[in-house]
Image (cartoon, rainbow, N blue to C red; front, top):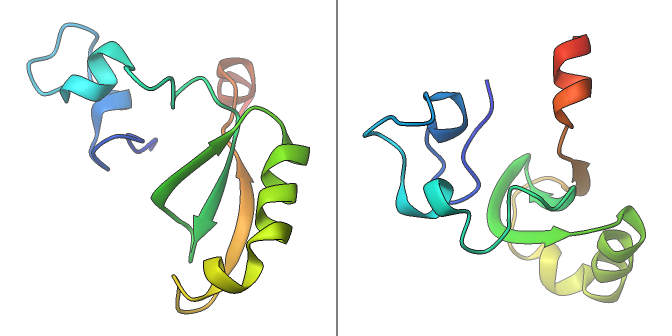
Length: 90
């Protein structure tokens, strides 16, 4: 199940015209759903650090490692949003 990058809810799994979509997801006002890579804290997208490329994400992670590590309990890592084609293949 995919989680909404805006509210942490079920928005990506709702029908397009659902009344349960948050405003951010409905309009993707920040383009978060289009960005492919993100930095996760203990597996959660709690700080909304999204990047176009893995290189950008890894550079940000490397440059800010000490500060980012303070924001989590166990693990900070770069994650990849799955494309629609990848999701359908699984």
